Length: 68
Image 1 (cartoon, rainbow, N blue to C red):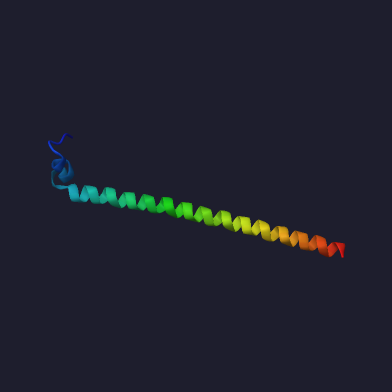
Image 2 (image 1 turned 180 degrees about the vertical axis):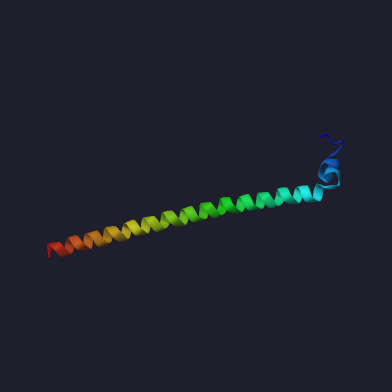
């Protein structure tokens, strides 16, 4: 489809509001999913790291207990 001007392109033959609203809402949803996934991934890595540190402390405590 070819438009004669930028305003015709934005208007999309009278359906521009719906077209741009759908593009905008899709972009917001995709960005929300992206940032949400990145945030949850970071939290998961921190939880795994703290779990490993906790297990290491327990292991060292058991070793110290066995030596006494």
